[in-house]
Image 1: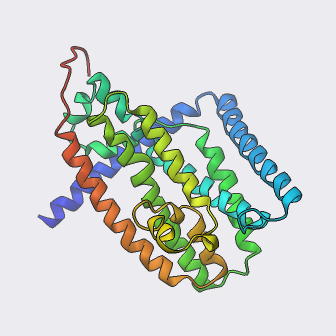
Image 2: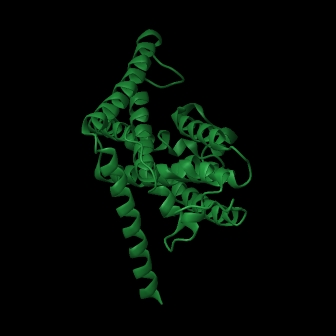
Image 3: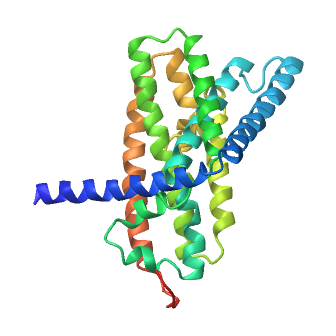
Length: 272
């Protein structure tokens, strides 16, 4: 039985990677347009960073953060956003599938629905987020005198951040489509708010508010906590992140599984 399950998961992952490769090849079919979209996103994000640098130049510190720290957390945010959107941006189309009653073709296939959705679409501009985010993150790490232990904790908190972003910005808000018609905008706004909640300085957040942003809506793990781990030994935050990410991952998967049962097909006739 265990071997059969392993073979099944390997087949499912193979289907997912094959679908994702097709999306990448399709996006790269027009190489000039593909490169322009990536460059455009890098330029857009660079303009955002330049605006923040201008503010820091005028005011010195903002909410207890210096320019160096905020640029670091912006880079981590970009990296997390870009990576998850490259591998799971198809989940953003779930509300459209549900509203139109066109989820049938995926439900009838043997591969898991989540993997089919995740690999069903790709936004080329997210590669720009990955490239710039990775560059800024590596730059910040090079200036933070990172030890092996800190690097290990940082990578661990990055995994936690990826899981939580996937749960709160992709799976959970878009699962609302099974309960609310035309919920696509709600899902996008919820994802954006969650990403922005990770850019608050951890030093000025204390008590109930800090605990709220670390557990109930754990946005601080999307940028602020990984940054904090880099310049001090934050093993407690890393352990908390593992527990929080595990809880929310199980909750969101179960919520999605239950929500799918509410789906009603529109019985569209056509080739699938």
